[in-house]
Image 1 (cartoon, rainbow, N blue to C red):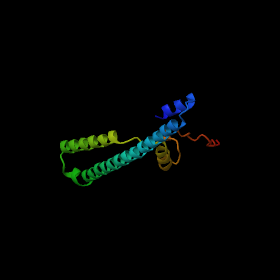
Image 2 (image 1 turned 90 degrees about the vertical axis):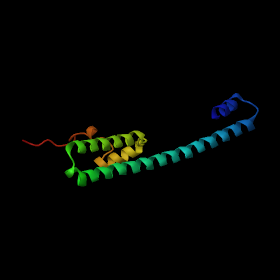
Image 3 (image 1 turned 90 degrees about the horizontal axis):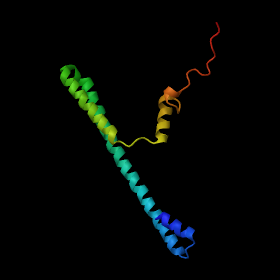
Image 4 (image 1 turned 180 degrees about the vertical axis):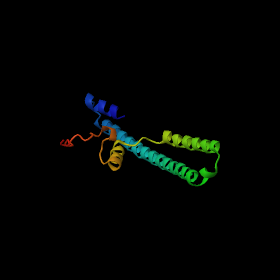
Length: 129
């Protein structure tokens, strides 16, 4: 719709009112899409966060309580189930934004760069023999 409004405006059409209405309708629909999209992302993030907590709590129970009394095959099967649940949550989660990745790296590593990209003692003074 915005393209149609822009096309009419550029073509020099004498219907300035129509161009304005199309532009306003297009902007309104765009704002609705933005608001509804953010609500979807928020509900998906809450659902994924709760799922991560469930997997974490189940893993803690397994490690602290159940693991000592379980047979190896049962423990292996339970671990595979927890891994499957975590991978399922990972697939359904939205990827983090670029800003979230930078903040996370800064908090985890003290720099925006991934640890593999950090210069290794680039400015270190070599030891004197």
